[in-house]
Image (cartoon, rainbow, N blue to C red; front, side, top):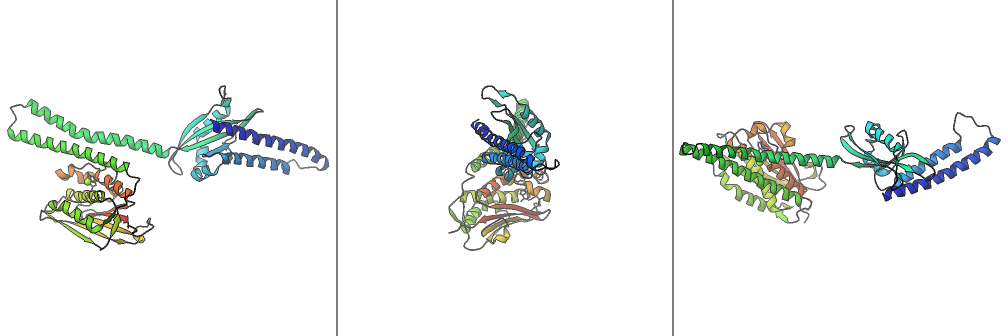
Length: 412
Ligand SMILES: Nc1ncnc2c1ncn2[C@@H]1O[C@H](COP(=O)(O)OP(=O)(O)O)[C@@H](O)[C@H]1O
Ligand SMILES: [Mg+2]
């Protein structure tokens, strides 16, 4: 409210100056006309000067306000636009000012009654959704400027961007919907089998009872994993803004990963190949990076659908110059995990790290593939963001998938 009082004051000052200037102009003009004949088609210089002076003052007034601000005339013309507004909304301004909601709100603000409590015209607000030139949601709060001597037809507009807030709201709603759906499916299956066991008491063979119990165990394990992953993801998000500072040797990291996954490579038809340059060091959280590679290796194994084909997984690390990551400002380490599994169709690749996203074709393939939660790669992305890393996938259907991870090297 005090902002508006200040504005009102500023406006009163500017109008006083303008009033004084117009008095000066009239006085000057009166004297002037007696001496020269002016053509009526072009406004006299002094009049133009006055209009410019007023425009300058309105711009200055807009500039003094430490928020994205516009001052509009009664026809929606921009009389003042501060640099904050320029910087944020330059390209969207024409579309915003043309928008019917903006025009209606301006008309309402021009006619708004005076609030008896504070003696100021009421605030009129609207939220505008723009599709062009970029999709954004902008809230406009408008109030007519006032001054001591009568009505002012200028309207002060404060702009605030609601795009990220709206996107976050949508994401939260989607997330809750997905999470509850994912939990509801195994719960429904559990309920079904419990009912079946109750109804068939004594009648069901021990084999079928065992089968039901096996499925029930699978479903509870799935729910457990889903909840564990959701909790892990939210913990990661909580510490997402702090960068890990502990030096970690790639040799050591690969040794831990290989120790963890060895039992899964006991089978003859799975081979893990590890290859790395010497002396690579990162600043990283070891547990989190181990988690990244366990998720990736788990995927390579889980989605390998041809039991008669030997699965080869290659884990590699080598130094990478900035040319291998165009958005990097320093040298880094490129880690890759490549498999010769079924591959992923190109149109799925950009969505793999979304929470709950699963590739339908790969998901239905095997019982193990159906156990997925769609959260593994979201966790991977979250961990890498915290490490200042970059992640992308390349894949050829029928030939395999490679996950590429770029991480900044430790400046020791
Ligand atoms: N190496 C891979 N080969 C084939 N498909 C993969 C591979 N890695 C991931 N995917 C696909 O990407 C989806 C998302 O993976 P992820 O986030 O780890 O979730 P999930 O819990 O389903 O494994 C998986 O459902 C799977 O369809
Ligand atoms: Mg996974």
